[in-house]
Length: 207
Image (cartoon, rainbow, N blue to C red; front, side, top):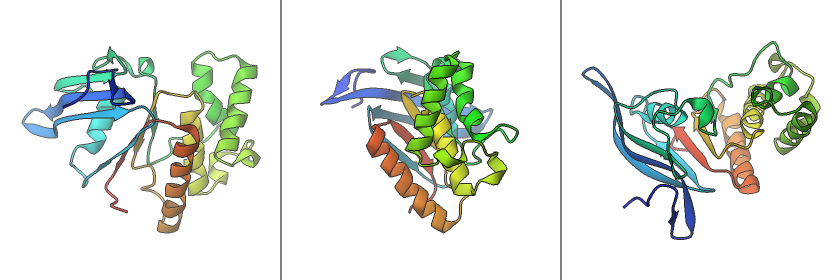
């Protein structure tokens, strides 16, 4: 039975609680009723074939899609209909979603600028994020000058730089070849262990 939203389950604090969430478009069901708890520091993977509703659930949690029914709790706060910018959630997409006209440093700094973080503090946070993903040497480059694996690491850095309470990953390795996917799986595992971040990860890849 799910713990009360925001309360500890055993020794763990619940960061995200999804209660009977479903989404339909007229007669078409995009997401069958789903419930889960995500504890602080946990890495939870949603595995299933394309069309099973995994990404729909992620978009509901992010606030980019509203559910037909059910509740989303973030910590102890009911957040089902809260706007995305009020949820303290970061999202990493399959297609990187980097701004092509901005340098890597500017890309990572973008969410900090949108949150009104002063320039000196933002510069420190961007430098730290680049060091965490082990790419400080690419700060002045444009996204097109990086490999696919490097771009995905920068997307992770941009997501982590403002320290969201939960990170959602929607097929983040789907655009990479097998060798790069294997490398990035190790990289994501390292970052999770190093930073203790809370992650909800969606994939159809059983590997």
